[in-house]
Image (tube, rainbow, N blue to C red; front, side, top):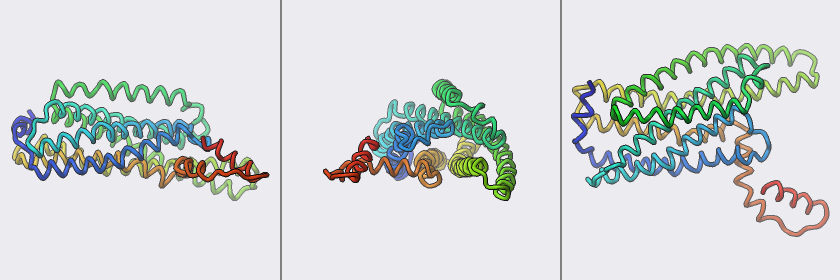
Length: 324
């Protein structure tokens, strides 16, 4: 029996806590929406034709879930917590923010699981990777992710927030953590094995085929390293949140003040994950970084086009056409 939900449901949260959570939600929204929108735009525009891969499809899916957080969950959190701090009725805001929170969390966890499968296949079976994980299969996996994410959270209306959060923490986050840990070990072994293969390729004759294989291997290694950083960020944000959910459900002697603090704090940790994800792509993946720079420079390139003559004019006009 979960007694903390019933004992604290009618107890108001501290005003300072409510206003702090509202301000943090607003700040996260200003970071989450532009960053994740830029990720989606980079893949949609794909100015250098290098981002249409199964891995980036899963990255975009993760960015879409983070956009839901930035465009739905965080603005509602701002309104809800400001009203809570002003002692105004919050009505249906609670159910809406809980549903968007659980939908986005489920989609994020499943998207990371799909990225795990992608990296596991790429490292463990590099020769069969393209055949096993095609764009069509990636779209089917994304569709399945959203089907589960849009249907499973409705259980919340039956069992309540704390119970569903507790079940979600056990079945989704904890289980996914075990799967990630197992896959991380396998991927790490695969990377070490491939490093030995790369060294043998470097020592052998530098044929064009070997150079192509080395470039492809370096590309997969870079993506895998980015995934490991993403996984680390996920664990840093979701593990404390999971621990707080355990405390909220199992600490029967905790005061309602403590329960309210843990409730908001575990929520803020999840928001932090959605805000920071895009910076990982810009920081670690050259293809994304170049696409971001190209997109952000489009207006500037169009503004500097002036009538010129000869070959220089042709080059500038060509850049303008490519930028539209």
